[in-house]
Image (cartoon, rainbow, N blue to C red):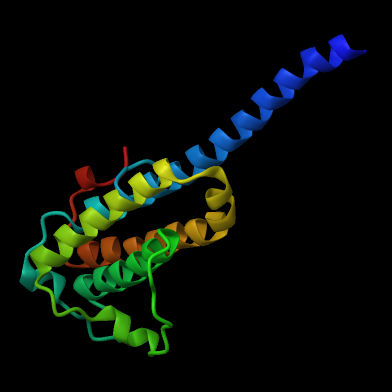
Length: 171
């Protein structure tokens, strides 16, 4: 009996480790696919590449947001979530969500900070302990879905204005 336990125990440990690695890999895949990669859909960074300041501020006749506003909104929330994930102080947010769509930064700086933030998220996920990943899994998945939703809006704006080439799309 004790020999069977000694044989089964390492197998259980390997299975648990595979499960933990799978969780990390899944979250990293979500992060990469919604930030940098072009797999099933266009991700954020390719969607905002190659745009000039005047392009990102264009508004249509509806109440839709501009590309810069959408990017500012994503930066605002993704940075707050990363600060909380990294156990940094994050003040309670009591403003109207509409405020998050505006940034005083110029486009080039907002773009660069967004790129840095998305890279920081990837590093944070790679370095986080398993318990933390489990605790934050739902929040991270929702953040990635939120990023993808607004990225779709950005691509739509680009297509409406003929600023999108089919070669910029997914493989």
